[in-house]
Amino acid sequence: MFSFFKRKKAPEPNKQTPEEVAEVAPAQVEEALAEVPPVEAALAPPSVTPIVESEPKAPVLPEVEPEPVSYEPQQEAAPDLGVQASAEPTPEVQPPAKKASWLSRLTRGLSRTGQSIGGLFVGAKVDDALYEELETALIMADAGMEATEKLLGALRVKVRKEKITDAAQVKTALRDLIAEHLAPLERAFPLDRPAPQVVMIAGVNGAGKTTSIGKLAHAFQANNKKVLLAAGDTFRAAAREQLVIWGERNNVAVIAQDGGDPAAVAFDAVNAGRARGMDIVMVDTAGRLPTQLHLMEELKKIRRVVGKADAQAPHEVLLVVDGNTGQNALAQIRAFDAAINLTGLVVTKLDGTAKGGVLAAVAAGSQGVRPVPVYWIGVGEGMDDLQPFVAKEFAAALVGD
Image (cartoon, rainbow, N blue to C red; front, top):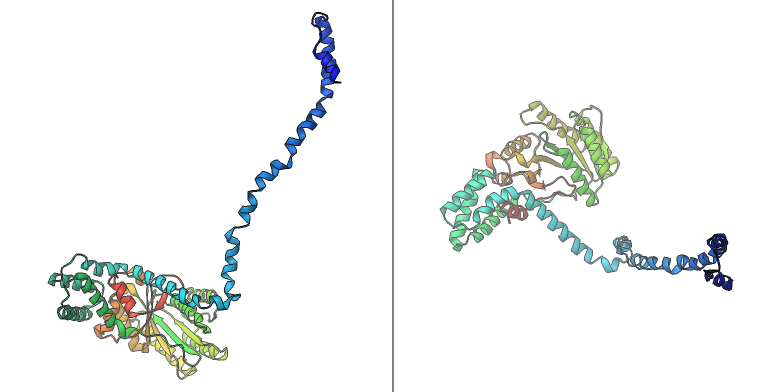
């Protein structure tokens, strides 16, 4: 075969005519095509060789093996497998982070008030002009005249006695005095009463009662308490449905009736709480203004009927106050306290107001208000944004520290 190609490829040009060449060419082409399969076979190995396919796969394997994502869920579930190794750091590390998060939210929530008060000390001189500006800022923050005069009077004495000349130190002194002033309002909510503990919750329209009940249910459950809710707001449209939604979020049962008597709902809830072994029964009530005397009488009736279901109940009567109302909160506290004898306050929506100083007015007993303890304050809409009131933390946020 090799000799044939050699003979055909090297013809004698002088011995063949063009016609002969045309006759021979097709034969040569056919024979050349007959030789094509061996050429494809020879070319096949390099195109099918496994070396080319294995090269792109090689770098994929090392990327999958060390991938950290697959180990993160195992690390989160690890405490069950190694309790002795992880139980000690967990309670020490997590609460401070949670606390810092709450303090930052509180500071941001009261930033408007803090800027108006704390900003006065920047580059200021300790003189009468500073005291006048502080007086204006405290009054604008709804601290009230009584609390403002008391705080500034104590501040002047402290500055003169300790010979303070630096504005930053005056700010620290004011913060400490406000914390001392608010200290009587700080009280932890008692959770050690015999079950069921009945908590009656009241407030004006839009103060955030139902939302606060949902957040409180979450907080009580975090303390291993079994909670039952009573939909005592039978007037507002969708009030019962709203409370049921909060109950579903917290996996808590809700006692409700369609258009029933709110006092009857509360009575049934107390009995149901006792029968079911609940630790806390929270009774929601319809929002009402203190000037609506017939509705205030209804609140008194609910309290009396709850007392028939349990002679010691209600154990707590809470008023939910919108922090945006400022000095109007004093009138609300005074009216509801006279009607149902309040035991504590829940102050909400402090994150959207520059009037956070209203608690100073409550502590001072302004406008004849009894200094009712503040159990919780809210600075956000999240489930954990309702936290116990701590005077030092609140004072620090109030002056912008």
